[in-house]
Image (cartoon, rainbow, N blue to C red):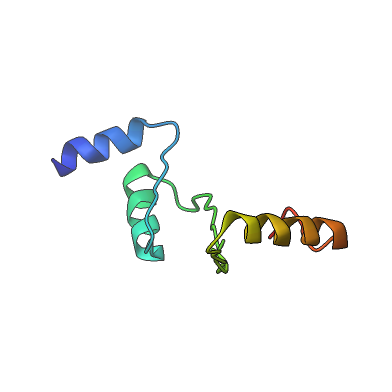
Length: 79
């Protein structure tokens, strides 16, 4: 299995490795199998932000608050 995997990597034009806990050791291992000493790596450091959920008992209350926010300019596309 490892021989076939190594052969596939050596013949690949591009390999994408995706892992939530990808380490330098993993990148170096795959790069070594491919014969690449300095692989190009993209690091995504995006973190989700918390959002607040607001609930209403009646639709009329929601609509009233919505109209008030729009009237006051208290909204943005980022919220």
